[in-house]
Image 1 (tube, helix red, strand yellow):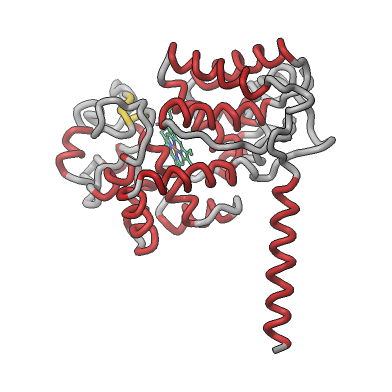
Image 2 (cartoon, protein in one colour):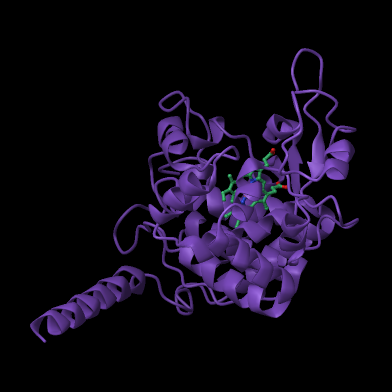
Length: 324
Ligand code: HEM
């Protein structure tokens, strides 16, 4: 009896702690300080995607890279400077289109309410708007994130999961960010959209094809990626979801590809190596509507990682430099 009470108490303390840690962000955060913030951001995101469809994938990926390294604090946006020559962005080059879109968004938001909307919140809203534009569903994003001032190559290297990870490392890396196995499988669905360099997956093609990869798919990939890049072999781009002809359309195709063993990275294929993750891949492949609900919830959860709020950090005026 005593043990049951203790357990109940622990559960309620844990629940309170969880509520406290996510209560710092608020829905409709900019309602009074910048009522047009979300509309302004959405308008710029949509026009940027209309002009260049690759912006959608770049902005969705930006949230992941921002939040996994030092929390969702826009540290990914900081450019190299003489004081900090190796920030996060110097290690893994993300699509320039994403950074440029954030510049445009920030300029538009500063024009309507100077100094109010953080770059970290812009990343979270812009990812949501990119999902809506490419996948046709939206979700509310709590806000109030503040921008950090530290960005180092070391923190990126120690926090980002690698495409060569197996399932245990992937689960561990998500767990360290308070994300569970369901979040891992759900968010991996983002690999339906966008592009990848050959160098991210040629480990699965050479010197021999990974037996976990469909042989026909491997043969298709060897056309744009005839050998490991380097020594005169270019590092070409391929669509993340080679099955579909419109790579900028975002749905649950990733899971269908995973079941057909037609996904790019070791880390994608790793989802097919454990019973529980296979079950979740199968569920998401079969039920687009249910995956959308899960994806929205997991994006909000990812957007809560180690946020700075209140008087912590700052609101940068220009997202690429601190104190600006
Ligand atoms: C599970 C761990 C993950 C690993 C190891 C991983 C790895 C990668 C790699 C290697 C690329 C290709 C980069 C290149 O070759 O240029 C990529 C692309 C991409 N990833 Fe992930 N990723 C993971 C999770 C996520 C998550 C959680 C999201 C977002 C919810 C995401 C969204 C994307 C998108 C949209 C692209 C395409 C980017 C573009 O076209 O600009 N990834 N990822």
